[in-house]
Image (tube, rainbow, N blue to C red; front, top):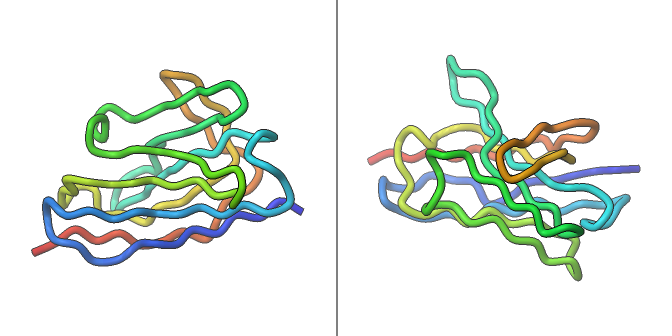
Length: 122
């Protein structure tokens, strides 16, 4: 039974930082890549980042490159998304999901977490 749960969202001022966590159960991080996605009001869901700890693949969407860092802790079966230099346009519900990804793409499939809200505002 594959399950994912996000945590770490909240309210932060522009330029601030948050660390999101995605804890997986029913599989290990070597079994599937894990992607981070977000959806803001009036916008389509978009892939943000992805990690495949088995082959070392890392993906970042262009707008977050240099600001977000994805990492995995195999012992905790958890993937993190460290977000720095946050901008109002980063505000969205963030989801993690089992994913397929390469260096230039991410596609979620199968299992999704319930999401965590990130709000960047003064």
